[in-house]
Length: 244
Length: 221
Image (cartoon, rainbow over all chains, first blue to last red; front, top):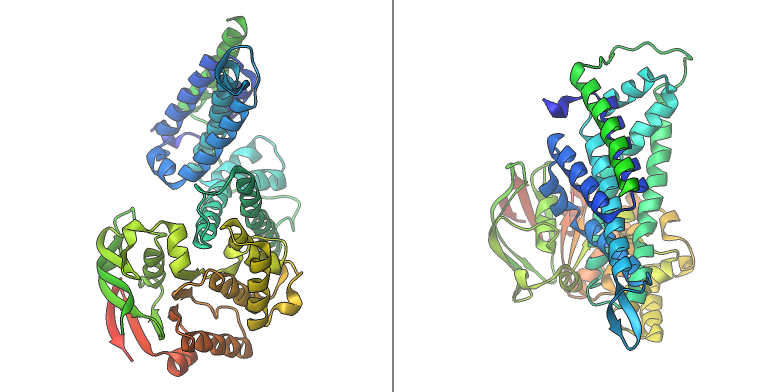
């Protein structure tokens, strides 16, 4: 089964996807990476439709950021002009689409990684000779992405229950609202970090310099295949995008 | 007494298919404290979230203040029913206690002067006036609960749904909170309090709803 591939393979895949989407500038190639990352997520059994339903507000936020970027980018090819001020330009739209897809790929990458058991992810990193503490922290941070998304949604609901209609407030106030929205999320992430640190220390994390492992991962043929395929396709893709 | 909230044959199933609420019909009235109790997983919090519109019922209808709840957006429900989450941290957003109450009012178009007056009045009522410049997240749990209540009441709702408001409070702080809730009820606001606290249930409840496996099994006192 494709979705049961080694977490290290998923790391390589995700690194390739995110690197490609950041390096490539041609819009059609960026769209292509978006399609590839969604396809990969589907293969990894990420429930995309459930994800869209649950996190549609974050997607709207990403879309809004992209739209703002699109509006504020100036170019000679003006598509929409109001009172002599260019609102939409061809270059602006391209930049907006690229921003949206880049964020989407990062979001999808996080979801691909979350399909692996976090203990296996840590083990994978350790077998790559990454120090256990760093491997554990990296894996933990990935695991927290869905939790932060949930907290973001809760905060959105709590704000609306204060009688705030997101659709009716002016843009200036919206910025203020987003600052309010981020405050509890940042504070709760700090609180989570503190609680985890205490819990880990109370379980003797790092008490002994050497660790023995019960779980040892073994890369299989399909893992090597996916890794090699990802790297090769990425190199070819990036080279093509630079040539064209 | 005219019921403020009416639920008719409301059911809710989680995406994985497990039923959390099954065929619940209830009337909730203003001016009374209704305690909702039951074991963990019996559907108490789901009931609260469904009334608030945070969860959408699979079947059934809900009427809030005479209006079909389907016609009410979350922001409108928040003006009719105040909802306090189990964890008050989820409802605190600003850098000062005072701003916590004024900012939604100002965003909704109230003048700064009127919002300030209202906040001052509410902070005094909830014994928080001396903390008005403090950062809400740094308050004690009891103070946070009171601040959440004050900010909810700034919206002038007709009903409150409080999800285990006494969690993490010591005996004295619980009593203070309960007395405050009783005062609010005497002023005409109704409330459904999801609680495991026997002291509160025995001494303050006008009505007790007991839930088990997503159903109301006892409704009375």
